[in-house]
Length: 320
Image (cartoon, rainbow, N blue to C red; front, side):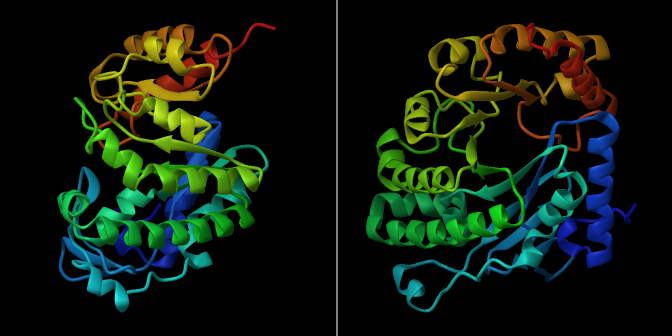
């Protein structure tokens, strides 16, 4: 077991120990798959702030994902000299390790940031990118083109290293509505999603989209794009029964087990009941993968997570 620290600050030996712990947990409680991300080199300036290999500056958060506080691109002229670094096999060490240890028996998912998320990282924050949507459309299309090309390169390497499935990560909505207008989504994001999805399908693999929040005004767009799955169907703002009825025959629904309350503070019996009810609603006819309504974040109780997995094995069996 490595010493507790942010993975961005760990040396190679500590990272491998961490990956080994993840593998052992997956095997011990019998989870059907594992998702791994790109872990590139980082440079810390102080105890909280670091820069990744793309020049994006982050501030670590002990209970969540790092927050972007600066980016290498602020105006279109910056693109004349800026180049994204090429993906390296060492950036996908976690993926390679999981393929070696689990690949024959579990699904291996490579999670990549979507063009929307990578774009706002590079310009130093989501607000900056949304302002550019209004004022500099050519600029944001150039950034989206650049990060899409880079994503395709990462997909190539990930699939070559043994990934089974691609996850395209990047939230598009808050609990009440989408972050951008439907028109902006269709102009600045959707075409690049279509390109990526088609690319993965042409390689003979599946790809799903991760986005929290209430994306109902663009849900049909996500189905139309061709994503094979949609994660995580957040119960605070989307009803999985309604989603099953409306799109459940056209796209695999994933998630919905509440990680804001159920997996954090409810009893083991309540966890089991929520899993049972969700399976009863979402599983008929196929096309449902049980998972949390976001991630397994630091606030999730280990015993509740284990109870969720056990309940999935107990109730998640189709009658032949």
